Image 1: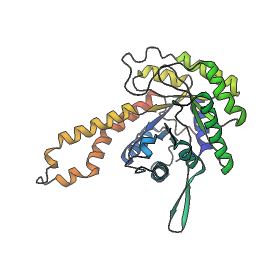
Image 2 (image 1 turned 135 degrees about the vertical axis):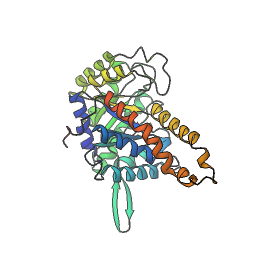
Image 3 (image 1 turned 135 degrees about the horizontal axis):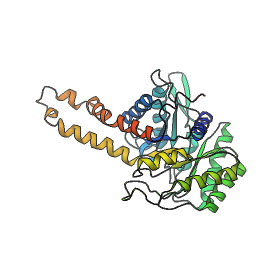
Image 4 (image 1 turned 90 degrees about the horizontal axis):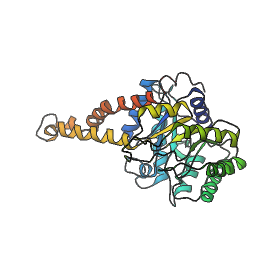
Length: 332
């Protein structure tokens, strides 16, 4: 079931209390979304499906229009997540890595809702959880943007659940920065932040040759304690740049306060390598003279092949993070 902002906050708190992390996959196609939900079903686990700017503007969704992309993505995910097959799996739709001049317009629409019409019926599509890319923002800009997101929700009379981040790549976020960023937003809009994404010594992409030797669970524990001091409640850590972290470090991080683990680079690699394998193995059948060329060329051919390779990888990742069986233990 696709969760509301309030339900998403409850799920993230459940992950914190139970000591597991929810896998957050940057899924950039309809087939990838289907595979992620299928993996979550097999593992009986919650799942976060998130999109960055390049996905919502891309060919599969927005065709250059990011707000159309959010609406199209949400409509597809809503139908799938609320179907009989997946309705018992908690699903969060999260905005990830949205930056640039379009940022606030996109996120305002994602928070307040985007109207979609079918004949004489209307439905409003909105995101479960929200973040923006703070990598190019000053601390003051980051705070101002987050406050504005809260204001968008207040103006529309809707809830909002936020992930706030600092510049996360290849550094450890200082405590004083956390105190300033989280504290200023919490002072104006208490309770809206459910995730904090600090720099913990990792980087996005295939950037580690040593499994991020500098990454320590103590950094996670220190952040969790600091957030408790600032807000008076438990706030989970969102781990960006998880590709390259060994499984034992991921598992340990989930047990001590990481509640969301972003997964993009490795996910894309698995899918692209599977597609490459398909077109290599079936190259002869793709010739139009071959009696099986049409079935081979159809999207279902490559999508099914990729799914058989990819879904077990997603299930494995969910299990490493401790999410297996947690869908059945979460009550809305």
